Length: 166
Image (cartoon, rainbow, N blue to C red; front, side, top):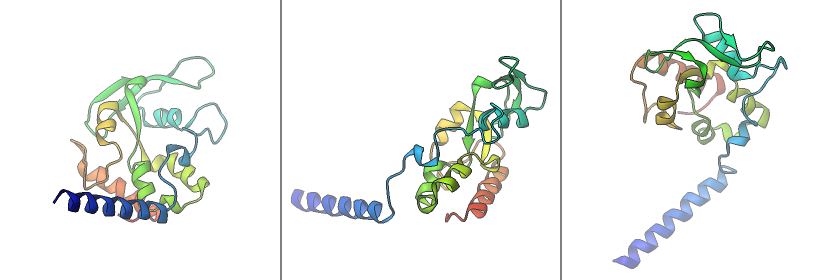
């Protein structure tokens, strides 16, 4: 019996490895660029620009250069909670990068993956706890405690825009 289990495990691992090789390289965050991009080169990367656009009040910056947001007022789409300190927020990819990789992004160009990782349609400022709870899960594995229908609609909008398979 033990030999049969070992044999089955070996066959399954070979099948999984074969599928991974057939689909290309394994997922690495770096395949989507080296972090938040500053496309317009104004010193505000995607994170900062999203914090500015999502704040319900004018934001405050760390310095007069206005590169890094430190205060504002954000309402988490996932919980409805209000945040004033930018450092308490993560910028979440509604469609996670690894999930996207596993559903078609592995076949995209590096430029398309970089665009996807920095696309405001796929980004939302939320509390770190819920972002980390979600991880790389899709709609069938995780839903936020609030605004479920809005979350599902945004997720599906990103799938359609980028031609990802659910």
